[in-house]
Length: 215
Image (cartoon, rainbow, N blue to C red):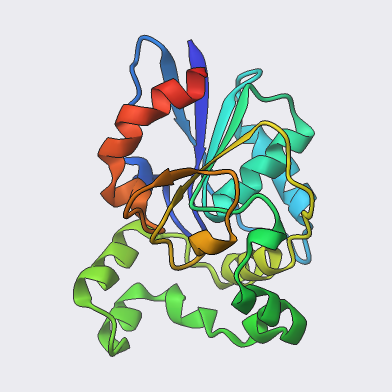
């Protein structure tokens, strides 16, 4: 049996994987969760604490978006069978220009993350955002502690990995607005896949993931 650990995206809970099914005779599925970071905690130290959630040797680690960055950092600290990232980036060279601009100007520091501490308030006052999208946010984005959100934004923007890692499988949608496909290299492309394709294209993953893991 191959243990497979799933790391959700920024602020997301394990519910984003609720429709992902792997053959139970080949794989065991384990779902990781975000901890609240310590003050001024480095990504490396944060990942060391996350390792307490991994109870198997040589696991497969799968991460979505920011979770994809995290599982790459996990693979630097422990031996893993395979690293798979979804809707994410392998280096900061795959970040869009707006993220580089935010790093240079520290614009992300003024994002009002306090709005996300109360999803009911956000839903009530968010004009221009489709109600269905807001309901999705409410369901899947459950980690709304301001300390975590501020830390996560700053950690993503300042991630400094510049060299392509070895043995990372990258799955990416060609309609991803967060990490546009034009900046992505060496990836398995999911046609019409968006940044939330782990949720709305789960059938593709259920069909393809077992083979990708075993290759």
